[in-house]
Length: 366
Figure: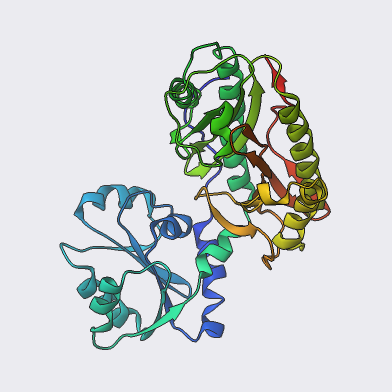
């Protein structure tokens, strides 16, 4: 597999902004201020660390500071751009007046109290808190987004193939995590998707184990949870490998978790809620008497963020839309012995789902 930057078709950001603007009437606003950088990227294509979007019907105003003047010229060519020298508030007020908007929604979950106070003091602008409108749009991926996630998953699969040959007695969790990170970068990832988790033996009883210098020993089962990023889009996969024949209980737990995961995957389809999918997998583990050892949720959405909606957890009412990419990752954890987790991203389709990893789920014995 060759590395290099992925080049796909151009993204229709204007269409995304139009879908957002269609919600303004119900929200009771003239415009929406998008301040979370991931939402700004989704709606404009801007990849810098500081940018805001005043979304209005049929148009929009993009704001940033002088560090990103040239970058925004290249990445946001279809919107009026405002480069503000120091404070955002004055530029925002002038844009609202120029565009004739007064009632402006703001992302209540994405703005600090300090920023809200600064904008709330502006004359001529009424701020209206709104929910996660941009996030809801992002749940369903368009074909280009899915292609980017698929490319990130291809890199993740290939990195796993590389690391298997490097598992040897005495190698540490930290060394394996580093080698996985390097492999993903060499294979074309712009960066790793999150802090890679590598847990050997009893360490795997911690679902989010902090990778350490614990060495690999004969009979250990290793958990590897990792992912890469391509053009902003993430992958997320967990696989198991045994270094020598594992303890019988661990092999049985792996078989149980695999059956639970397959039950969860089989229940995924457009329109079903995350709670229903979670229960399909959780019931398998509960019937085996291991319910108390599966404490986390079954999964989450993946896209521009490694954790986004919809959620797959007990009681979740999130209806899975067609085109969503979600993880299915049950686990069972036994203190003093170890743990098992198997994780796949799947694309939600009308009558089921399509798993993305090509790495086998079965326990690999080295």
